[in-house]
Image (tube, rainbow, N blue to C red; front, side):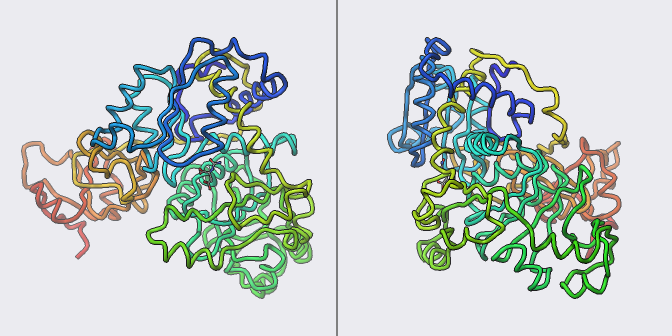
Amino acid sequence: MNLANRNLVTIDDLSNGEIEALFSLADEMADSPRTQSGVCQGQIMASLFFEPSTRTRLSFETAMLRLGGRVITAVDIGATSLAKGESIADMAKVVGSYADIIVIRHPWEGAAKVVADYAGVPVINAGDGSHEHPTQTLCDLYTIRKKRQTLRGLRIALWGDLKHGRTVHSLIYALARFGATMLFSARAGLEMPEHVLGKLTTEYGYRSIEVNALGEEAKRGLFPLDAMYVTPDRPHQPAMFPDIPGFSIQIKGDIETLKKHGINASLHYNISENEFEIRLKKSEIDTLYVMRLQKERRASTEEAQELKRNYPVVDKRLLKGKEFKKTLVMHPLPRVDELAHDVDDDPRSMYFKQAAYGVPVRMALLGLLLGAREVPIPEKGDSSVRKVDYPVYAGDSKVKCPNTNCVSNQETEVRYIKPEFKIVSREPMTLRCVYCDHELHPQYVASSDWHEGKLENKKYHSADSYFARKIKPGNLIIFASENDAQGHHFRPSSYVKQ
Ligand code: NCD
C-alpha cells in the first residue's frame, strides 16, 4: 500500500484495509521504536496546534523525532499571522513550502480540509472544532484490536458529551464501517448531533432508535441511562432491537409482548419472545468510551456549569454491572470528573494505553503519508466499506452552511471559500457541507435547464416537490429563500407550496 501524498482529514480518508495495514506497521514501530531513525531522515513536520493539546501534539512530535525527522511548531494563533487576518489558505501555502507534512489542530470545523486543499503537502487533521479527530480514532481502534484481536462486529457504548466530542464522531464512522453495534448514552444537551446521525444513516446504512421508545423493563436491561441505539442495517445480521417505523427487524415473538415493552411493532421477528428478553438483559458491552464535557465549546459558562452538574460518572460501582464484566474502558483523555480514579488500576481500563499507542500509530502514519514506508493491504480488509460518492453542489447562490463554526462561514475565509455541499438525499432534499458535515434542508430549488430562450420558464419549485426530485444534480440550483430565488429573477412554479 502506498499512501504517499495522501491527507488524513476525516477517518473516511482511509479504507478499512488501509487502517489494518497501518496497524501492522504500527506493531513494527511499537516493537522497535528506537531503530526507526532512518525512516524520515531529512523530512520536516510542521506541528500547528491552535488549541490546547498534550497527547496529540507531543506524540506526533515524538513520532517524527523517532523516525529521524525534524519538527517546526506553532501553538498559538495569536503568535501567527492568522491573528493579523491572514486566511488559512495563505498560511497553508506558506507552511507547505517549508515543511514536508503538516499536522493541524484548529477550533474551526473544516479548517483541516482547507489546509489540505491548499498546502501541496500531506495534511493530518489533529482535531477541527467539534468535527473530527481521525488520528485519535486510529489510537482507539489500535487499542481495541490489541485487546480483542478484531475490529469487527463490536458492541460499543459511548458515554458523555457526544455533541461536541470530535473523537467520538470519527470513531463511530470507523466503527460503523467495521459493523459495530453502538449505544449512545447521553443526557439532554449532550446527544449525538443530528448531522452525525444523518451521516450514519446515509453513508453507512445505519438506523437509529430512541431507547425511550422501549419500556422501562427493557431499558433497565439495556443500559442505566436513556440512550440512542444504532444498529447496522446492512450487512444482514439479525438485529436485536426494533427500529423506527419503516425498518424491518428480525425479532420473533408475540406482538403483544413487544407492545408491552412500548415497542411499536408492526414488524416481523424471528427469535422467541423469551430470547428477546434474554438478549435485552444480556447486552454485554465490549467497550465503554467515555468523553469529558467539552466545556470550551459551550455558548456560555452558565450552560457548561449546568451540564457539569448532572454529568454522568463512570466509576467502580457502575462497572460492577454484569454488562461491563469484560468491557474495555476507554477515554481519549484528558479526563476531568467523568472517569473516577478508582478504576485506574482495573485491568479493563485502557486510557493510558490509548495515549501511549499514539506514538507507534502516528509513526506508522507519518512514515506512510511521507512515502517513506509501504505496507501490503490485507485482502479481507475492505469488505464492509460502503463509501458513496455523492454529487457535489457548488452553486453561486446565497446558500450557506448552517454551522456558524464552519470554516466556510468565517470572515477571513469567505473571501475565497465557496460553500460546497454533497447532495446526500432528494427525499427530503438534504445537502451535507463538505467542510464540516452539517446538514441543510433547502426549501426552494430550480433547474438550470430552464432557459432555451424562454425567460418565462425561469421558475423555482419547492424542494420536496415531485418536480424538484427530477432535476439532474448538474442542473440543480438551490436558493436560501424565496427572496433569493426572486432576486435571481425566478418566479414561483405551480410546485411551490403556498
Ligand atoms: C481529545 C480532543 O482534543 O478532542 N483529546 C485528545 O486529543 N486526546 C479529547 C478531549 O479534549 O476531550
